[in-house]
Image (cartoon, rainbow, N blue to C red; front, top):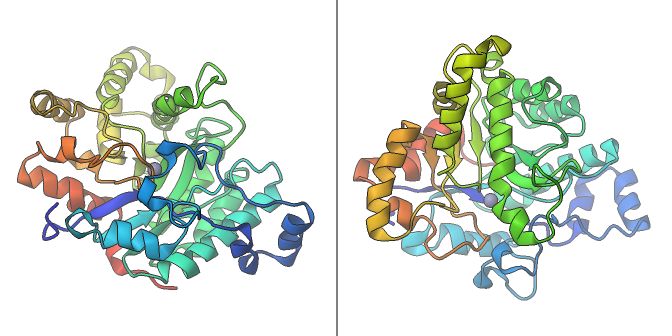
Length: 363
Ligand code: ZN
């Protein structure tokens, strides 16, 4: 990758090595609670630590959780030579979202954000981060967004696709109102947050079913956001769909447009074709890229795909570090784009999506 182009990596995961790292940022009550109840960590069950997909071999350093050391992430993501990025957006997947106790969840999310600011954003001015919120109470999630709005290191609000209820429903709107007011996009990442199964038909037996099916929850969330009218109510809002592939989008756009023609009286607030709404408000990260990786097939596929979604502007480069999909996960996509398209995917689309990203990080 040509460093002269400039690269923004829109999906990098930073991990908490020990829950005690959060104690300085937690009210004493909750730090004591963790100790007294033997809570040793909230590593996400969505990414089992020993499973190969969860971390590249080189990210597993000295037995510590992958991506738990800013120095290691810096060297492997930012200072990685021709493969390195100039800026990286950290999406921390510490599992505060499934906590049933709302007060504890809110305290943990705030502590996680303060920890991100001190341990990560202060470690390198090229790190950016997403605000982790506890969606158990959207109004309190909005308060957390407002608390950190204006902090130059936080460039996005992070939600998980496995939510308690579809994310477009009105109960979630305080989150979108706060994000829109702060000028921040909302990123949605695979992960279980609300006790619902990861698949629409119920709980799978195996991890491969859960992970391969991550796109199904994402499609449901996108359908909900469009049809509930989130983008009509918050016209300045952008939603970024992370780590869920991209090639499923044209067929969903077609189904929504086709059915909107006959059923739009049911959703009178959606005044434009759903595909138009999606092109205007939705962006997708490129890792893992789920199109053909064979050169001839990719050359034939990509122009058609871009024609169907309508714009290369919707795609944001991501490595998804430290998750291990394949080597050079972006190559099949980037290698067959024009120079202008490649520059958009690597940098310009992210600059448009994250309007504050060049303001820089601060502790
Ligand atoms: Zn990811």
